[in-house]
Amino acid sequence: MRRLRNESPAQRGLRPGVLIPLAAIGCCLLLAGCPIRRSGQAARPDAAAPGTTWLQLRSGVFERVAGPDALIPASWKPWTVQSRVADMSFLGDSAYCAVNGSGLATIDIDSSGTPSFAYHYDALIFAHRTITTLVSRGSEIAVHLYYNALLNTVGPEELAIRGISLVTYIPAQDNYAFIISPFQRRNPEWEAVGFAALSADEFSFEWKYTDAFETRFAYTRYRASVREEVEDSRSSFVLSLGVPAIAGPEVPAGLASFFAACQAEIPKSLTGAGLAGATVHFAVRSRETPSRKLYRSESDGDSLVLVPVFEDGRGWIALLPDGRILRAAADGKARSRTLPRLPERYRYTDLMLKDKTLIVPWEETSFTQVGCAGLLLTPLEP
Image (cartoon, rainbow, N blue to C red; front, top):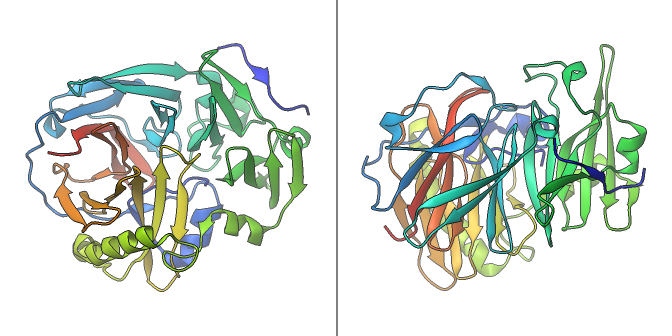
């Protein structure tokens, strides 16, 4: 284990590209361990663009494979503890991905499109915990994680370290530090099952305590730089999860137009699943923002689909539920391309753009279980 230093004195993550019943949205937004079922993906051409690279996670390492037909079967595990790409972020020019159960990996891509990885892993911190969110914090990158007692392969007494929900990676030291709020220091048996980054320095937590007799929740807001924490409410926490609109005064006009273009295409993606009336939420990230920002539409459908969006300063790129990529310049018309077809039960889950290469995680899923997982790297312009 690396040497660790304490930084304190004393969303939950949504899985993108997925569908859930709207009756369960509150639980999936706020409670740990709620599985989210992914939408079906329509058949697509097998051909990948020249320069495309397939990578499979094996023992925490990204190994190159020839394509989906060459994937090596993996043991099924709960999505909460399986090795998979849980989130991605930039810290300056460096691209990071969170490898669930292991820690962070830095992705470098040379001029020929060939990737290389540097691994910043710590099993004592990350094993048997679920990573939900990366937050870029200037010269550091924070990681929210929690222990899910329901979907796990070990009991809480087997964890090497207890009472942690937020750590920060310090590249200059190649080391992790704990960020422990006063609430968690007083209550190490509580888990921060819900999390939202209000900025690079202010965080909103939903805390959960469970024993054989009861389940309790609490809510706080914490400013890490001044080590100040205040009590919060559930309603305030829900508002911190994102903008409760996909159009209107709270949404930039260009972004709202892009959301509308995505909505026009999504019924084509969902026809096979019989869920063309799904409510759509968008999770938007960019190089400049600390973490993903969620734009939540009104709950007027029977189910929900979460669409990852990357903003690159020139426009937006979205991953639709059927694996199509929709692009639009800030002042241009949207156009789409199709990612290579994945085998049955496999799904693309997220996307990020580094230079001219799309980084697209994928997973093999079966309800609460995940098998194989990895990355697709493909040129933005095929």
